[in-house]
Image (cartoon, rainbow, N blue to C red; front, side, top):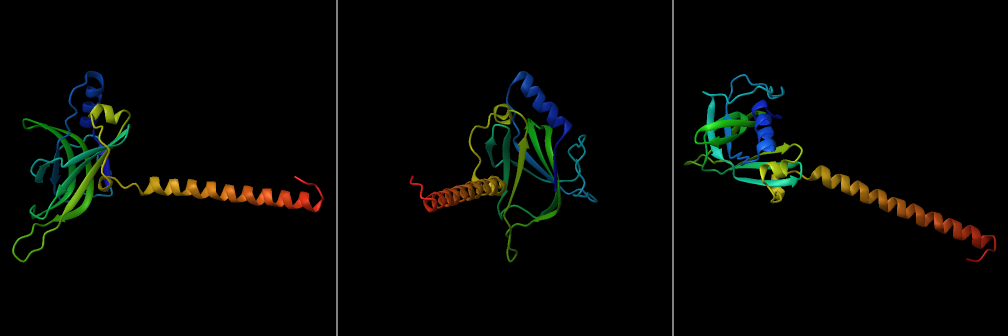
Length: 190
């Protein structure tokens, strides 16, 4: 899955940096684009694929990951469907005028709603926007919920740091023991 802040998003970010104002990323657009290869990164010139849109919904949740990263989330429950999608866009929609901020290509995803004997599914999709000053530009100062962002890499690096520190402490303790033993054997009191 490839995700990119597109040119229109970069321009919008630069405008907010220069002039301030509401960042306003407030909607997800989902589309099914025939022949889309999710292994390819979206071009910087990507636009909303009119004619292929299958669903639009307001941003469900947003949060701050760090000063330079924010996350926007879309939650679709089992009342939403039926459609397939392979294109996700994060947009700013003001009175029907839409600015595409970021886009993601994905393998075809199926969204089904609960209806009769058909069991529906729930889907969450997230866009992490990473750029200098993201928290201040977007005005998002509330920490992201745990389900919005995978903290596994951060936790893994913390675990490695802790294990390294513990190993260093054990090594130092062992070295001190060896020194004390050597001094004691030599008849030197501490």
